[in-house]
Image (cartoon, rainbow, N blue to C red):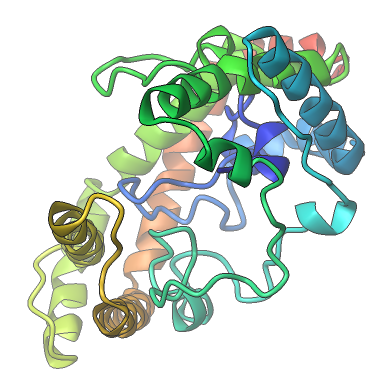
Length: 318
């Protein structure tokens, strides 16, 4: 069960460029954190404000709020112990989409693991695990619904509503207070959605599509048969999903065979490294980032008033 680092950001998991969330596996790799992003540059003051927050104190406050909320829902909840070290984000291996990142994490579509199912040596012990394990299936289902909120509709459109995210959402909303209220601003959430749409549109730009053939040829020389960049990443994501689905079909509480995980983890890394290498050598990544930045600049030019209003709502004047 996720408790510490995620709880403080769960309800306001809105702005990709602020690093509040990690990209999901089905999002296009458009170099979202690559240098030169016009939207990132325009809203940099928000990033600076977020950087100045004591994240550990915020997370601890959120944990206490979760405990109070869960108690009101009829459950016990022991707050997780949070320190600044728990919230450190390691970026020494580069950003997703680079050879450096792929060498260590592959595509990173399964929580940035190496596919071996290894647990970090210093991972915190969930103080609520034993309590939840003692519950019946009905009780644990109710517990998690109180904690995370009802299962969201996968077909629902628009931003998530913190009030529908259980005690996690309520606690994060309370913990933000006025200083971080801008993280829940619908306008900020819309910017995040626009970033995702722009990333998708960039992959269909004429210059990008034209060079994708060179990427495909490069991948073919490496022993892979993919027509598009998206297919390469999807092949790994689909393989992981199938592996876990097969294991669950055999045993609802089971997990894939370790040897199978190791083999798929190695395939993940090998494919991602070849992909990143070919993106670089073919010029695909350069074209993609250029297309994305051009689309972002169009957005900034057309929406300066809205972006300035967003900054103003956070107490920042340009």
